[in-house]
Length: 289
Image (cartoon, rainbow, N blue to C red):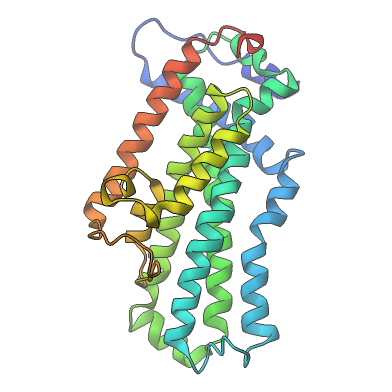
């Protein structure tokens, strides 16, 4: 309640384009929403969920360093294994469902808690509200899942040993690979966040649409080349620093250049947020949503 009252102190929106006013309003919304995302009642489960890959890498690297992974002595195999863990567990599962949880609740959670009308009582453009909420979810997901990615990479490199890591990270391709993994995570949060924000706005029960998107992303490797490109995971997969085999059943498609993949994801996100802005204009009251 208090956070909603704080939102009501945002200055009235100007009738003309006033970017400085909109930026102030977005910052005000961001302060409110970030507290909810990091300290709200729904946050604890998300923290535990995001820790799963880190715990897995800890077990492989520290608890059983000479086991089947044997990271120190089988470094190329360990890199490929991490690439599969990253894409299958972190990207397709942790980031996907984590973004679903964060972004679908940005509006749907307010409707359930019967608090969205406090924002609607403010003299605030609906597009500004969408932007403020989206950036708050993006900040939360990026911080959380880049930490997941960095923590997993830490244990991967820790098992290899200090001298080898120094050479690989600073005199070899290691640092570039680390930054690429972190960049892919950020792009995943960017794209999936926009998708789930829209799903939360358009559907009263967002679970079924989210599962349909999940199935589409998981089965992407089986789709024809044209349909493969209508997905987020395709562009993320082509950015992987370690080439991964999608299996014997996968449809062969030419890898998309990073110079196309990154702008494509950014443009896609912008279009989806534009769609969300159109949708929010038609929501006059939470009971109508």
